[in-house]
Length: 282
Image 1 (cartoon, rainbow, N blue to C red):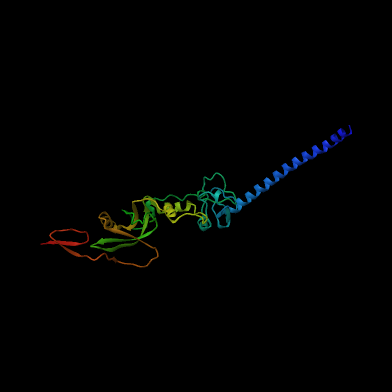
Image 2: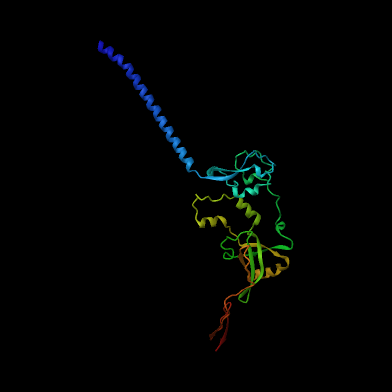
């Protein structure tokens, strides 16, 4: 009787102790999980690549002119950035630009400014890119002459005419207006909108070159009108040779010498070799 009462008296504290232990174990487990998740988030944030971009210190509304006082640099997570954000190296290009008139939502302060936020310039015709007295001249170009697609609008060339195994300078510092159907203005716009490669991104030289070049079989140059017909004749006869030059390179050669002309005499037959003279004798 006494033993039964004693067991009943101990049972209640025992059950309460078990319940408290279970609750404590559950709470401890949840606390440990929260600590682990917090550590994982901290680790992810610390390893995320942050990129400096240009932001505004105040909201930018449609039609608003951008002033240098509005611009600041802020580091943001690279993964969340649009592809056409503006980087500090291009910040000066923003000064004086107009926020596009059809922008529906203002650019919030602290948000990255994008190229698409800006009012597009009035579209110029191709003729408007030419200076006085210059005309566009298009010519076919080989893969070797275009340097495997790396020749770009805005580059400068010297033009030589191949004559009797040598090459005479016809025009120097001729600007490339377009490669294929990509003009200088379009090429610059493409470069603006491309996201630059960060040091953390492992890309080979070949991959970077493939990203830069494009396929084309013609180039368009700005040449004087009085030289156009002569250049057309030389290009059609494949006697025009473009040579890429550095814009500030002052060196100049009016004539490039080819291999020396050699006379070959072959007994009993007549053979014609390009660049060589031969004659038959018995």
